[in-house]
Amino acid sequence: MLLRASLVCVFIRNCHSLLDMKQMKFPKGFLWGTATSGHQIEGGNVSSDWWRWEQQGRMHGGAVSGQAVDYWNRYEEDHALMESLGYPVFRIGIEWARIEPEPGKFDREALAHYRDILQSLKNHGIKICLTLYHWVLPHWVAERGDWTNPETLRHFERYARYVINELITFPDLWVTVNEPMVAAIAGNLLAEHPPFRNTFRDYRQTAVSLLRVHAQCYAFIHDAARRAELKKPPRVGIANAYPVLVPWGSRGWKGFYEWSIARLGKYLACHVWDNAVDTGHARLLNGFRQIPGLRGSIDYCGINYYLRMSLRFDHSRRDRFFIDETGVPPGVRSTDTGWQIYPSGLYKAIHDVWNRFKKPVIITENGIADISDEQRPAYILEHLFCVYQALQSGIPVEGYFYWSFIDNFEWRKGFGPRFGLIAVDHRDHNLVRYPRPSAHLYSQIIRENAISEELIGTYAPELMGPFETILKSGNRGRAD
Ligand code: IFM
Picture 1: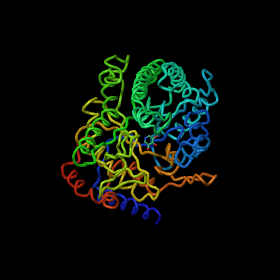
Picture 2 (picture 1 turned 90 degrees about the vertical axis):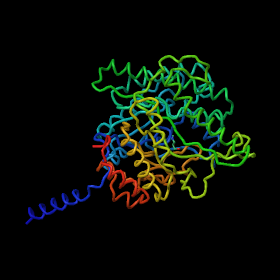
Picture 3 (picture 1 turned 30 degrees about the vertical axis):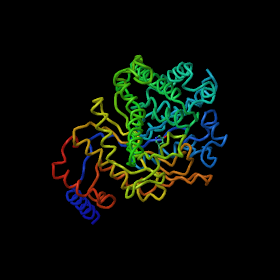
Picture 4 (picture 1 turned 90 degrees about the horizontal axis):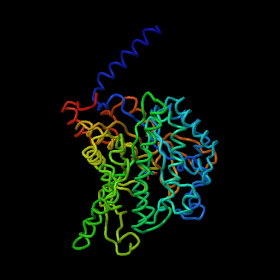
């Protein structure tokens, strides 16, 4: 009797999968993952510059990172949850301020703790993508002029060599620097992030320093991997932000101004960096001087993609070059942070980096602030649809990491925006983890290694037409 029942079950399951053939299959071995950074989830990063600025009340509403979601102590629980949800890759960051809280004094316990975290990920069968610098500096570095002080490069080199040598056996992927141009622009041109400056000189110096840091780390990681005789050397890249910037479309000279700033902004935010890595010269930033080791120093192109911004002239925004970027044109969907949802920008970013570098592409961040979790399923599916289209056009996109695994400290905005697949109530001192419904949706996509008609029909019906067209065209490309 029992045998017959289980045979019937197997039969029904097989029928179901035969009927459910309408799927967009991703390539075998596609790297599905989630992303975070140290300061945003660990808690207690007390020797960092951000911590100090937070204590001085510089964040919105006086927000402080405090214990964040206490990942520093609860990593084991989080990794077990990640494993149970079936998320195969985790992008995390390591905090320089923990490793070297005082100049030249390395904290061996902190390093051992990071080692435990990485080992725990391995034990749970989760692959690691490790970020070396994600915007946060030790306080003592910030006090001495951060990236505008040439000495900082020497200090970072010492830290990076130490960490890379100690941890080389763990990561499959490394991110040297997260969104370098956001750090340079938000901290030095727009005075939005620490160190809250607004001069072109500081922007330029910061950008050049980060390019140098990246080139150094690229070489260190590969050297360390060679010395450790790793069977499979890790791959090294940058997680770069590629927002879409468009003019609002005002009339007359205001429109021309918006158009010019959109072009300049895109240039300063994305092209300067990509040109430099492509050619080895940081044009505009430091004349035509070459940066040693920079040319071609990426094994993959890391894309962080979130939004489109429409830039509107606003004479009251003197501090922001008379531009307001927060407007949302009528009919355009937006997130809890007021960011315009614009999935096709991801498709364009993939094409642009591929055309320039001809290196595999990994989406190192993509996500939405959505406390209700009502928009997240469609957001994920729409962006994955673009990834799929890029695959179909022959571009080797190798992975996608949703930002964020868990609700994070969202920099100046504190804990307001909720990007996590896992919800945490920061006011509850138990910091209980609650997977949002979309956490399970993401598990399903990963399990099936595909987006199914059923999911599209339920969460993103506007994609049904293009979905059918792609399936009719043979669903071939790089997907298996
Ligand atoms: O939280 C940030 C992250 O630190 C860098 N990329 C964008 C995310 C969402 O704003």
